[in-house]
Image (tube, rainbow, N blue to C red):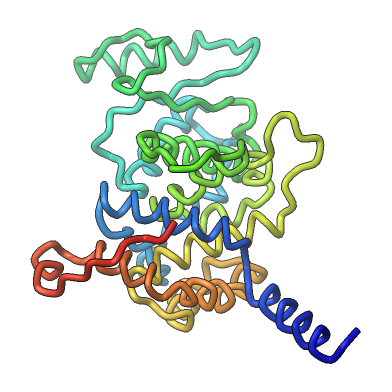
Length: 293
């Protein structure tokens, strides 16, 4: 190999080493984030860990026999807490147990009493529509830490992003990636980073025999989470200092790499930061840039 060829190969290798995710995946992250900001505003800041005000660690949630509540009441309580943390508390979304052979007599009685007390229809609605969104879970899997949180967060994110349409055809995995980006916009990137196996199952299309590697899960979550925080103008050092206690070690090691790749798209990042500014401030500093295809 010639010296020029060797130098070129070295440059390509160095470029690949600096990337956390593929460039086409990075473009999708920017596109989806732009849509979310235009429709819902600046990315909400994830809860800041504090020894005085403990942030909810939804990834640790699991139901056990020692709980005085039924699994259905337990799920209802945590569902409302997760909705609030995702800033979706104002949406009327029905939590529905699902699974073969479920004995729902106990659930039905509890649901009807709660519904009658609040003046709602005391019977479950079986049809999933845009005006009647539902999220589903299997009560039997709630004994597994992380199952309920991941299941609910991803479905709430899917509702948040339901009107998004990409300009280009997306593979089944990329369609699920859109939901994952929306979940980080809903402030749950660190929660999902602590349950990577659940996210791997979610990202893996049913037709695939091999699960999506955990490396891809962590890289994607890290990139999406850091993108939202870079839009809020937080540096890699600030992200680690503020949220380090919420990050798994492998996630924390990738933050600087994610921020470097994000910052390499300086024009696109500047557009997102401009879109995220309050409208009054935006009018003072017009910036006619468009997200590149």
